[in-house]
Amino acid sequence: MARGRLNSGSKAEAELPKAKINRSSLRNVAKLLTYLKPYRWKFIAGMIFLFISSLVGLAFPTILGSLINASQNKFDYPFLPHSINAIGLAGIALLFVQAIISFFRVLWFVQVSEKSLADIRRDTYFKLVTLPMNFFANHRVGELNSRISADLSQIQDTLTTTIAEIVRQGVILIGSVIFLAIVSPKLTLAILAILPFLVAFAVVFGRFIRKTSRQAQDKLGESNTIVEETLQGIANVKAFVNESHEASRYDKVLRQVVNIAVKGAKFRGIFASFIVFFLFGTFVAVIWYGSILVHDHQLLFGGLTKFIMYSIFAGAAMGSFPDLYANLQKAIGASERVLELLGEQGEAISIVESDNHIKQTITGDIAFDNIVFAYPSRPELTVLKSISFNADAGQRVAIVGPSGSGKSTLASLILQFYHPQSGSILFDGKPAGNYSLTDIRNQVAIVPQDVLLFGGTILENIAYGRLGASEEDIIQAAKRANAHLFISSFPEGYETIVGERGVKLSGGQRQRIAIARALLKNPAILILDEATSSLDSESERLVQEALEELMKDRTSIIIAHRLSTIREADKIIVLEKGHIIESGSHIELIGNEQGLYKYLSQLQFESSQA
Image (spheres, rainbow, N blue to C red):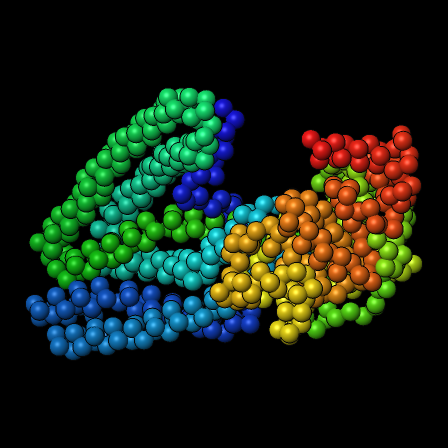
């Protein structure tokens, strides 16, 4: 079943993909590590303190072993004081030193990672908001959000924890093996012969268990998808009497979850038994052999204590490397995805607000000269074919035609969201390339059919048309847009929270706020993209009045389905399959008995009569 394939993204916790660690991937990571450069001295100091802290930690088994030996009046190291109290005080002093070192090491690593990650987040977000529309057409919002959240969080964990742990565990492992060899070469050979085998077995078995666990998560995600789909489409389920079918699907998946979980439990039980018997059995064997050496006076009792502790250190360090390596792989994968985003070619847009003021004024003349266009994501499908028309400053030009004829594409080209494959768009007789993107977009406003409002207040949404506008200007724009009356009726007035995408407002209210926003912007060129097509009659009347106010003394490109709203347009252009097939005033076009405009007009009239 097709919808069964949708569950791939339903896992409660999707694991980040891992990347292979090779020379190429490490070079990519090195590029991202340049963000550490401004904070390199703290990072280096943190690494030095980490190294010292690890070495100090390695001294504790020696101190404890020496204390035990000192209790029997045996002092095995000449560099340690020959006094129980002095050795104990030395241990306390070491603890104090390590506490201070650990504090600064943690503080500096966090400072470096947080500041460098903030820089990466900033640059990633800045890059995102300046990327062309074609990029967003080919990438999901969830995927892009994941790069800023999950991927960068993984990189942060690596900077703050993983790198430090790799260094620390490496120092502990090497130091522990050296100290083991110093304490007792015989015991060291015995444990090194067994321990790598045990760790390797644990790693392989652990991977198998994780794989089984992921299978169970996948199936559980599939069951959650069934529940979600059933509840979302409960009306269809009941209408087609398919309750038993959905119950059967859910029961089948749940049984698979149980079977995988039981299978995983069996292997986890075997693994637990292995750990209990072989790993602890190994330590029993080592202690057994060590006790024999102590009994034969080949090893001091304190030496055996030191050996046991260093064995635990070495085993724990070896056991931590698989997880650390996996985290490093995830971080490298995350780094590659972030670098891929940072390497995208952005638009010529400055993220410095003062750079985006209008430098070249547009009076409002606009012309399409033999435009041919296909979306980059679908190059084989030509949307606009040899389109040529012009709109003089202050004119109202309507674009009509069936769905898919290319009407909204014209709006995207005017805003320079996309660029034509051939032909040119002229503003005031000059090619669009002669203007900066910010100059064009600062002087073009659009009121779309589906208005998107931000989740803040009404005041903030209107002010988005001209940041920094005074409250008086915002209220004046709302009055001209027929919005002031309904805004004032809310208890919070202009401070009313509109909710995500403006869900707390009706369609007509959202449209009028969008019109107020466009009025505040005061553009030279206005695009109305089917701005009244989804409104009831009363809302349409209010919005239409606001649009009339908005269109005064400015060039207006009106994309319309309802032909009744464009009869007063200076020019009507009829599109079909990417071609202009008719052009003229309403009177001229309605007189063409064989024309598409006449046919569409009659069709809408008959529909309204019915």
